Length: 334
Image (cartoon, rainbow, N blue to C red; front, side, top):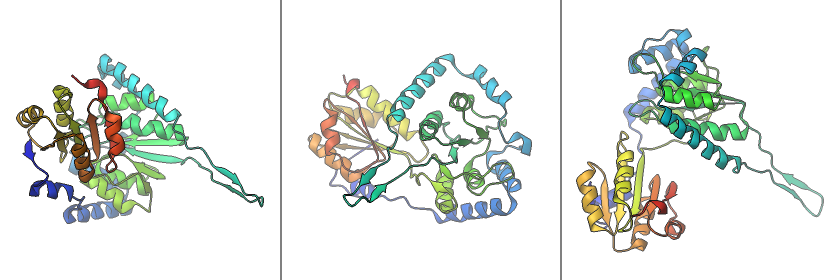
């Protein structure tokens, strides 16, 4: 981890960073989408052979009930307990997060109202390359279920032997996902967005992925709805002498293990900065004088994820106005 200052050129470049589409990726994805549009499943299976190095027959693309049942025999029992607990927590949250319709009657008797109808069919993409994101399954399926989506489709890249990560299958089964397909990359997004004989068209595609997946979602928006065009994964952590250094280092390492992921530590502690520099191979550390400067730096940086590991994280969170998700972690102090 490289220690920098707000006065340096590196900090200014980081704050000015933008999600840039590489022309090469854009062109390749355009070819893949057009190929899937013209040739359907034949193109999808061809790209699966090329990119995932797996030769699948059409009847092997959709995961069977036998495969799903077998997955329960290959999952760590301890992990299964934790996954079920995570599912219950997310279900509890989204059961309280439903959007309520608004009804307003004017004095002249005119009624104004809105109505929210669930989508019929949603496709969820689960990455399986550098990391198999099991948490993405329940973080996407559960809100879809709570919203009343009728059919949920899941695609994820096959492993070299043609199978799917059993952890993904177990969670998908627990959440009653309707269809699971062994498909990854831009070709999976195209199949869900355009529809093929094997994969019926969906109304919306959600879920993270690499640059090719993000670009496919961008190009196909309009043919299908999408959640967002996600950029490279990144995290910034605000920490001080009260923070538990083991948790700080672990969370930074957890983010920077993603391909292209960036980690930022914003701290008032020189000893914590020295530890991060020693133990974390990539990313940047910014040393500030106080918590106010740390929050201001986070606002300038506007990270995808911000963790606030200080005694009173709520106060700092109120002052933070730019970025993605905020995570307040007062319980993991020294």
